Length: 74
Image (cartoon, rainbow, N blue to C red; front, side):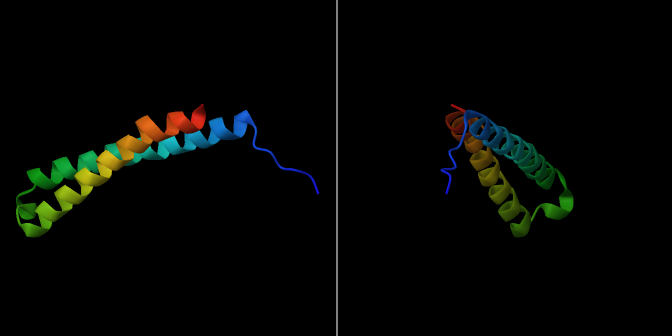
């Protein structure tokens, strides 16, 4: 049985996919957090909960995009 070693290209591909998904998720969550506060129908407890959830997820996606994906790339 052959030893399947991961090449540098595999790590770079994985880092690129992680960065792309994280960056898109970050932008989408910031858009949700922004528009939730601007809509009058979302100025209630559900809107506040959605804003805090999407803000937290945007920060998490930003950490993955800016901290974790460069570590995988290198």
